[in-house]
Length: 445
Image (tube, rainbow, N blue to C red; front, side, top):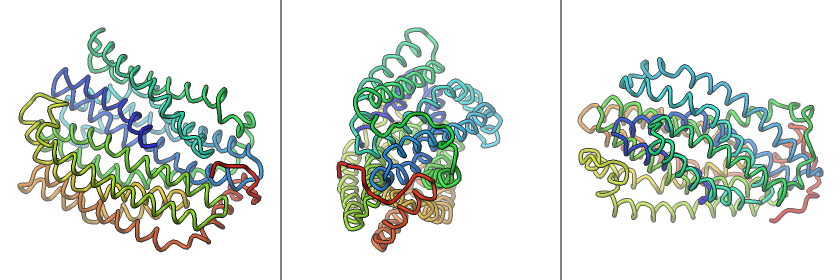
């Protein structure tokens, strides 16, 4: 799962790297555009689909009819497409929004056009993530990685061809990346249809798919808020960095691009945990679910410690991978220790957040994030940024918030009554019209 999400994020990261060679302005525009996409549409793909982490995984082990999983897949595609359409409208009119947010004129104009070109490809991203959840619920984790091993090199080639070779420049990047997203989705569908995963597909059934929409949509929206409250906080940091000037904005672009890549480790671990815990709760194995949740938390601390060491040892040269401007490189080196420091807490946030999603408690994670980020850390970071600390002040605020979130979520997981959560897993399925307690489906548990 970690490798799959790392490859998935590499599609954007390589696009930014290739575009960044054009100019600092192009680097800032591409990075800002993808960050805005992450804080809006990608929340549907990575936050909204947590409804499938909760429901689909429990359905696979807790429902008498294996085809219920196929119904949940269709319901997800229907709900997520509607939610994405709302975001597409926002992207279409984003230029005045960026002006209201105080971004520089070139960002307002170029990022708005960048996002408009990305709209068709973004739907491929959402559907690809939905298909991944359908397979993950069955314990099939490999194909997402296999597919991305094909489309990640394809994405590099397409970006190079369109941005540099064919001379399209900045706007070649969203075209290339959009094609890569759709290729990823179609290859995953082909895998599910012809290799493995078709057993839970009972055919198209629009009537059932669009019934009982509210329980599913509620979980999807709570998932968006759970993931979004953290990502929006980082977006606010990016917007504040834009007000600090061109060099801080470029340095922030480098750091955020790097952090999005690294975040695939705790996020992938959290997705694996949520799917595993959902399977175990659906199978009425609460003690095993508790063990899986704490195992994920311990692994995240170990991973975070390792990442911290790597970042600290490479901080003086890290910025050179993205940009040759020495001012940008030096500022990245100055701020990177703060980014390294919060990796342990970020790991706990990812793993324990995944455990909460597996229990259908997206709302708990959302409340913890709201209190931690918006109740103190963000105001503190913004105050420090504009009172002598600069970009480092913004990241200090996020560092404080992540440690609060990580500790609180692990405490909540530790205090969970897992027997009750196993009962609630079946009740959630029944409320969605797909779950009947029976646990008759063979699963790779």
